[in-house]
Amino acid sequence: MATADTAPPDLDAGFTGRLIRPNELDYDEVRKIWNGMIDRRPSLIAQCGGPDDVVACVRFARENRLLVSIRGGGHNVSGSAVCDGGLMIDLSQMKGIRVDPTERTVRADAGLLWGEFDRQCQTFGLATTAGIVTHTGIAGLTVGGGIGHLMRKHGLTCDNLLAVDLVTADGDLVHASPDKEPDLFWAVRGGGSNFGIVTRFVYQLYPVGPEVVAGLIMHRAERATEVLRAYRDFVQHAPREVGTVVNLRTAPTLPWVPENLRGRPVVAIVVCFVGATAEAEQVLEPLRRFGPPAADLVMTKPYLEHQSMFDATVPHGWRYYWKSVSLPPLTNTAIDTLVATAWRKRSPRSYMILFHKGGAVRDLSDESMAYTGRDAEHELNINGAWTAEDPDNDDTLWVRESFERTIRHSTGGVYLNFLGDEGRERVRAAYGPAKYERLVGLKRRYDPDNFFRLNQNIDPNPTSGDSRQESV
Ligand SMILES: Cc1cc2nc3c(=O)[nH]c(=O)nc-3n(C[C@H](O)[C@H](O)[C@H](O)COP(=O)(O)OP(=O)(O)OC[C@H]3O[C@@H](n4cnc5c(N)ncnc54)[C@H](O)[C@@H]3O)c2cc1C
Image 1 (cartoon, rainbow, N blue to C red):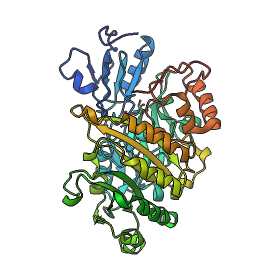
Image 2: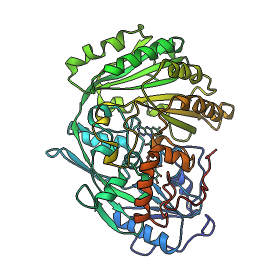
Image 3: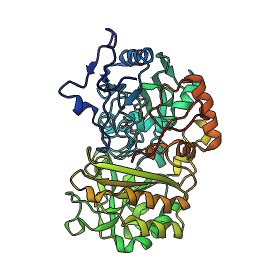
Image 4: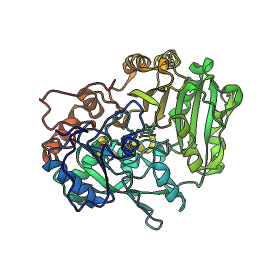
């Protein structure tokens, strides 16, 4: 296998994108991804210009028996977008997008980030469920599921996927939809990058905004227990127009955070109401009244503004280490555990974030596609974040301890896109045994050699040893 210093032979002349080798000036810049912990050196980076380039890459890698990684937005915490040695297939330059406002659909290339995607769709007053940080890639998020502010009203991102163009492990470009290649289409909606490289996604869109009633309700952490109990009671009966995410953290020093709360431990309830603005006040009243809060930043504002609100709290290049669990409706003991663990962290940048699901997420059955976990009420992500300059704030231990405590309250599942590099048993946990077996069968059919293996891997030969370990 090639290492960064033993470059493979060139891709054939048909490649129209850009090839970047270790000796090039911007090699170090291009191999960087979101998580500053990841420092891998591919022997060749192929920045693809279109699907033909992706086909050429897959065929080339097969012929030369190269390890392959696929880079979409480069946001995956495990760093699976970049490999040591081997070929990094970089889709980040493929940014074509075309909205059909009449059909309310969009064709979007795999290199787009959610901010770029949303801006185009909002030109027509449209959107689909996106991630809550705009510098996340549409590709990895969609093939792993996709949860966000709109999911309770409009379903998961993968629920709104109508079709894909995808390059298979054999290097063929195929179109998959409910009518064409239905098994492949079933697998790609939640199966991660195990079944091919998506070059283009087609999504269903909905009228959203351009203004929504959204923002944060902040409480001091001293009141976390009563706040979380009141929150639990509110979301139990909340209509599907109400999307909420709870953040247990240190309030960041950002312009929209009131000065008296900056640097303080807080519970922030992030609200996004996607119904008629006139109804928002009445629906959100119990949540906004409770406490009263230390700050109520809920207001009518552009959907695009709300979507980018948290970008600065998770910038590229910091060190990140995370673990996650799926949770049922919060019990008092689960709340006690969250409150007892959340602020034991060292770093002011670390946090726990709790997404509320339900609503339209439950409209489809778990059998409808590879994505698994519709029954979970919440997805909890415990994110340790620090910088190279403050290594004493390394929160790896806090993440692990918090995980050990919170997993006792979990459904047993985990959201695939919130997994780190945690090995086969955790991937199995994301799907459950029956779904995992079905996916193994499809993997044997579409990728029997496990060509696509730098991912949350579904091993076609599950009796082989699990070579993967924790990333830290
Ligand atoms: C700050 C932050 C916020 C997040 N917020 C949310 C959120 O709100 N909701 C949510 O659901 N998730 C969220 N996530 C998780 C996110 O969904 C995953 O990290 C996802 O893998 C990112 O996709 P990407 O394309 O940016 O990453 P990449 O690292 O480029 O790719 C991720 C995985 O997908 C594979 N892949 C990439 N492109 C393709 C392709 N075209 N075809 C097939 N496979 C491909 C890669 O090989 C890799 O294994 C967040 C992550 C971060 C870091």
